Amino acid sequence: MNAFEIIGGKKLKGEIQPQGAKNEALQIISAVLLTEEKITISNIPDIKDVNKLIELLGDLGVAVERLSKDTYTFEAKYIDLEFFKSDTFKSKGGSLRGSIMIVGPLLGRFGKAAIPKPGGDKIGRRRLDTHFLGFEKLGAKFVYDAKESFFNVDATNLQGTYILLDEASVTGTANIVMTAVLAKGITTIYNAACEPYLQQLCKMLNRMGAKISGIGSNLLTIEGVTKLGGTEHRMLPDMIEIGSFIGLAAMTESEITIKNVCYSELGMIPDVFRKLGINFELRGDDIYIPSQKHYIIDTFIDGSILTIADSPWPGFTPDLLSIVLVIATQAKGSVLIHQKMFESRLFFVDKLIDMGAQIILCDPHRATVNGIDKQYKLRGISMTSPDIRAGVSLLIAALSAEGTSTIYNIEQIERGYQDIDTRLRALGAQIKRVDGNGPSH
Ligand SMILES: CC(=O)N[C@H]1[C@@H](OP(=O)(O)OP(=O)(O)OC[C@H]2O[C@@H](n3ccc(=O)[nH]c3=O)[C@H](O)[C@@H]2O)O[C@H](CO)[C@@H](O)[C@@H]1O
Ligand SMILES: C=C(OP(=O)(O)O)C(=O)O
Image (cartoon, rainbow, N blue to C red; front, side, top):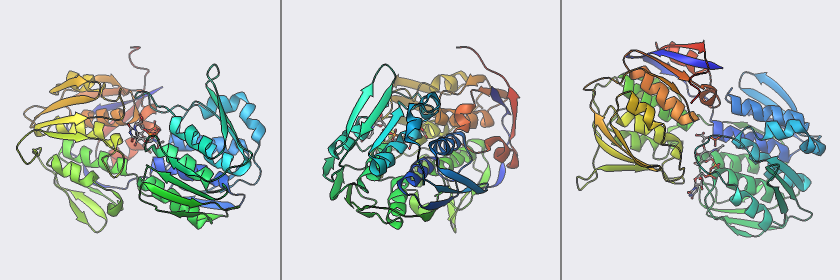
């Protein structure tokens, strides 16, 4: 097992290029299963979750060719549906959240699919009802084997219909869309998630011959077609990485330029960081963040304490709340962080409290942060990363802290952030990879 050792308190400087978006990549790569023709995808992040999914597709029979570090071709001509029965599938399929999105396309194209209960972050209950209720509406039957934690789905005749999703699930919407594009007739999905990830997926599917309208809204209309063809696709920059780098600059008083951010796709993310008092400018399509000693959290118009909460897109993404929380610890002012979606994603604040941050965890969903306005620095400590975004938040805290910190379980961070230590060192960070399992508790 690896750990990061970080000597904090150093200002960073320079330019950083965000990787391709992890959560888009997981959808887009699953969609290659919808056609026997070749699909070329570029700006694929070289991260654990994505590499595991690519490996899984290879095991299923997809011909995968890596043209360069970030560009692959995929050709799903022959798919081995027997592979579902193997132990390899049970262990690999269950190891990442994104694997759930192979179900929709396989069901659409072959009328059957299976998946072990997928992994991903342990950040609370992560149900899959929306996915399977959607497949059921389209005419599929599913069986959940609770003993084996395994889902089997079958359909002889997929028929388009009206589907009101029980919640605007991101991967659920992607999965149902990927089935409906090959179902007969018209499917209407209301309360659809509409993140840029999904917009990118729908645009790619249309280039493959699908007929999807309403892209970017919560009402998608899909006219089923019988066959889809090949295409080319380029991933957007990862908006969660972009937000993480804004946070990093603010906490470490660094002057950083984040290159080629596709600003128009960032929704309200920039506004939320501005509410925390962070200054930055848009230069072309780059975000330039000057070194700033102090940043002051806004209040609401009536002077009351600001709340930053997550909600489905175009609301603020839950994946950036941990970053927002850590930035607030060094700001002037207070903020209530309300993590509405996940019930175990704020527990990492204990580590920030150990580092000297002023935070009250009100309940599993809410934490109040009293920013200390850099009156003193956080202290470096040893800690274990509980999930991907908490991990990066702790990394940012460690880079801003006085002294040495060690972060264990960095596999969590590395499932979503490409070469993060190398890229941070290029900005002047003192971070190195060391061996270590960390504390057992
Ligand atoms: C691989 C991938 O793409 N993962 C992302 C995806 O996960 P994923 O697609 O698994 O997440 P969902 O959108 O299904 O749901 C996330 C959580 O929010 C709750 N929920 C969802 C919708 C809603 O209207 N109300 C509500 O409370 C769900 O019950 C669940 O607890 O979307 C999440 C929410 O943006 C992100 O955190 C994950 O990084
Ligand atoms: C929670 C996340 O990922 P996953 O859904 O893959 O666990 C995330 O990217 O923040």
